[in-house]
Amino acid sequence: MKIAILGLGGVGATVAGGLRKYEKDLIFIARGKTKEALQEKGLYLESEMLGNEVIRPGLVSESVEEIGVVDILILCSKSYGLEGACKKYAKIVGENTLVVPLQNGVSASKYVSKWLDGRGVVSDSYIYCFSNIIEAGHITNMGNLLRIGVGFSDGKDNEKARKLVDMLNECGLPSTYGQDIMKALWEKYAMMCGNSCAFIYFDSPAGNIQEDSRKMEFLRGIYEDINRLAKATGVTGLDTMPKRYVDEFMKLPSQTISSLYRDIIAGKEETEFEWLVGSSCRLATELGVEIPFMQKVYEKKSKEK
Image (cartoon, rainbow, N blue to C red):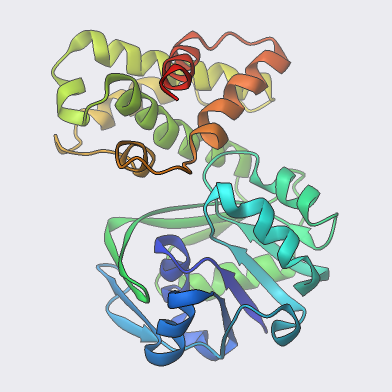
């Protein structure tokens, strides 16, 4: 089975670690210094759950012709690079290729299907992981919050998706298949985007928000916005989420921030703000749903540009 991983940053490297027993089946799609490092030394992953391993794939390449059509394509690039990546590598996706997008948010599968011109079988999927790039080809994965979910919003079955989940579990990366995937996607989105919105709006880490009841109420309002938006798309069962996530937020270390907020304060030109926050504001307008707290975050950040 040919399994290609596109994007060998924190997420892609962690997925590769979850498939390390099948390293000769892996294709790392990389370029530049990352490609050179992977070809020369392999991928070094340090992980509390998966262990410390050097993964040497069967192929490291950026060439569509050299890669050829694959059985599974796992998309791990940042959302702002996803369209270009899909269009560049569309030819490695065959009619029965399973495409697994692991970007943040709830709409990746819709956009990927569009950008691939309907090629392949695109799953709805997510990953929880905290990973950082030490240098090209060297990634560290921290903590025990590590899991992957793969499914289809229409409930269809897919043998390759089942096989992929089995392989990941065999290698120690907890993975599930066939659960209520859209509910799971919205739950992840609510935590990641909700927390990021608070960090961005108050321009501070978790501790500064935790000690101010008004800021915590604002955070709860963001979670409630997301619950209303999810309901408008037909996803239910998240009514307890706002309280649960407020409680979870209070347990975070005081210096906790999200990767999105980190990119913003670092002054990066490209971030996932529009993909994660702007897209929800546009969806809310389309569906006629009020999300006042997220709208405040979006308007404040937009004025700063």
